Structure formats: C-alpha cells, structure tokens
Length: 119
Figure 1 (tube, rainbow, N blue to C red):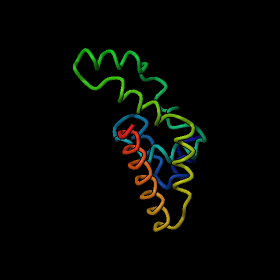
Figure 2: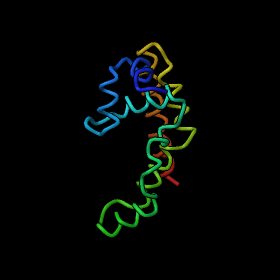
Figure 3: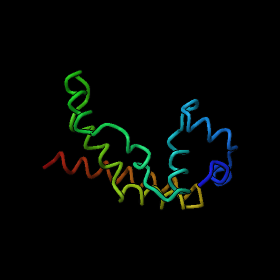
Figure 4: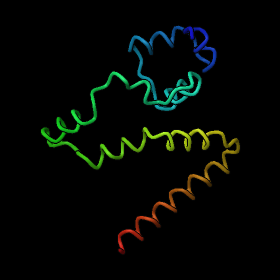
C-alpha cells in the first residue's frame, strides 16, 4: 500500500505518514492501532525488529527494572484475543455504551482480583 493510500485511509497527509516512517514524529497507540486495522495486521507486526523479550527481560533485571510480571503482561497485550477485544470495543458506536462496557470490565476484573486474594 502506498503512503498516499494509507494516509487517505486514516485521514492524514502523506507527508505525515513520511514523518512517521522516518521517525521524525512519534506514533501514538491509537494511531498505531488504526494503521494495524487498515493494513490488516496485528499491532505486534510493527515491533518485529525489536529485540526478543527474553533478552529485554534479562537486561531489565540486570538494571534493576521490572521483570517477569510486566513481561508477562506485555505478552498478554500482544495476544490475538486482546486485539480482537480491542477491535470489538472500538466498533461500539455509542460512546455511552462503550463507556459502560469499559466500566463493567474494570468491575469484573476487580472482583476477580478480590476473589483471588481470598483464596
């Protein structure tokens, strides 16, 4: 897909796409998600050239930074199930309904955390 077609699909100028591609401008998470949808690829596609998480985790542990728990959480964010859930969430057209689904999900996760602490 050309820069011009991608730009049109996400309502940007092709110059802005060029800036993203060169690294002149940062790409926000929501914009990256838009690109993934238009290109029909998972968001993780854009991170293919990144170092393996195991190497990164080892480096973080050596530096005293967060380790396995956060790496595990990052793995969950890259799962197909997570991407499908996010896509479905943003297909909810009514902002009020979308907000209620968001609040329901947070409530369910908190109750699950409390239940897990009791056992």
